[in-house]
Each structure stands twice: as structure tokens, then as C-alpha cells.
Amino acid sequence: TKVVADTGELAAIETFKPQDATTNPSLILKAIQSGQYDHLLEEFSPATTDVEDFIDKLGVEIGDTILKLVPGYVSTEVNARLSFDTEQTLAKARKLIELYEAKGHSRDRILIKIASTWEGIQAARVLEKEGIHCNLTLLFCMEQAQACADANVTLISPFVGRILDWYKKETGETYTGETDPGVVSVREIYQRYKTHGYQTIVMGASFRNKDEILALAGCDRLTISPALLTELAESDDTVKPALSMPAEVLPPRAEISESE
Ligand code: E4P
Image (cartoon, rainbow, N blue to C red; front, side, top):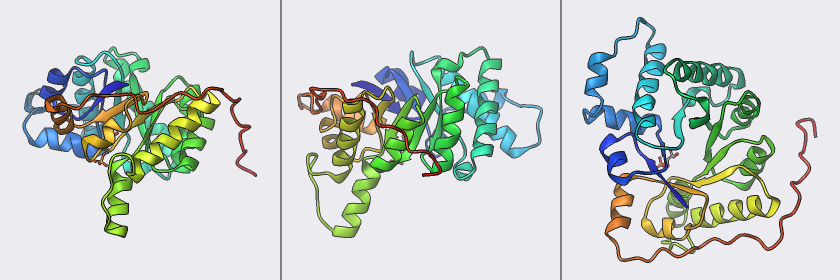
């Protein structure tokens, strides 16, 4: 498993030296509010009076800082408001990549993070053909995972904790790592991907406790908050592979076209 830091906190990235980093608007806002990007805010004054354009450019400045700290991918999220609009998602992703390339970054290390709605997945399908890599997030079920594999996206982020949150609220029950419905969901998706030999990277996300992480050890990537990374580092738990590769790899299933 490659460890990914789910944070915009620069100190945490420096401490844990993850392979990749993922951010989302609330994590970035948290990091900005804690003063970590004050230097950027002082130095950075783009020639724009358009608030959305300002946020895009500031996001790229932050991404640029994080790209210098990790060797792998940095995921940068498009506004959730665009989740049901393929054309606007395409326009935003292309604009962000253009801004990163203008700063001298290769598009190969940037993942455009897009919600796994039907419209988002269709945007990702087009972007991947342009060499713009995508991280399909807010992914809760096999149907979304299958559509992402069919669209040949670079990476999916199946969520764990938000599934657990929902089950806990609805049933009032408690769950262990093994019975955690979020863990079960990611394991099933991982098994299906590996069984069919899909190249899309599976990165478990949205963790609520370290047992969920241990129960998914062996997944391609896991994106983990600094709080849980600290807890793991301080615990005596032995990390044992919890996921296995299938004995036989089946051909990818024939894709169902939109008209069917
Ligand atoms: C990662 O890519 C996600 O943004 C993150 O793990 C979501 O976690 P949350 O459910 O705690 O918001």
C-alpha cells in the first residue's frame, strides 16, 4: 500500500513523507485558516477581480507548494457545484491543468478530483483521453466503481467512513474493522478491479478510525488524515496484508453503452 496524506497541512506532509497528497476544499480552507498559507496570501495577488478565478489560482499555488513536497500525485478538486455538469467540469479541469503547466508542472503528477456522478465520470472519460488524469471521489458503491473502470480513469477514491457514518446513524449499531460496511464496500470494489485486471488505481479514502485502515492494508493506496497517521505511528499494531489478489484474472467486462 502506498500511503497518501489526506491534508493541506504542509507540516504534516513534511513529517509523514507520503507518496501522494489529496486535498479537498474543506481541508484547504482548514489549512488556510490555520495560517499555513499566510505567506502565499501575502505574496500572491493575481490580476483578477473574479472570485472563482482567484480561488482557482490560489488552489494552484497551494498545489504547487504540495507538489514540491511529495514525489507522486497531488489531487486537486474541482468545485462540487460542477458535479452534475460535464461541460463545466471539462472546462475547469482544462483550466487548472493549464495553470499548473504554466508553472512548469507536468500534468502527469496532477489528479483532477471529480465527484463520481454520471456527469463527472463522463468528463473524466474525455479528460483521460487528453492525458489529464482524474481521481474520481465521492464513490460509495460498485456501480460507480464499474462506470469509472469503464471510463478508464487513473484512480478512484472509494469512501469508507461516510458509509460507516450512514450505517451507524440508521442502525444505531457499532462495527469493527472487519464488519465495517465501508471496509466491506472497498474490499468488494478492490476484488472486482483485480479480478478483471482493471488498471485504475484503488485508493481507499474517508477513514474514521485506524481499524478501517488496517482492514484495508494491501489496497493500492490509502489516503489518511494526519491525525490517523499519528495514531498508526504511535500504535503497536502490526500491519498485515488484509487484501489478496485473485488467483485468476478475467477479461474486462464488455462496457454497457449509454443507450442501453
Ligand atoms: C479524500 O480524497 C476525501 O476528500 C476525504 O478522505 C473525505 O473524507 P471525509 O469523509 O472525512 O470528508
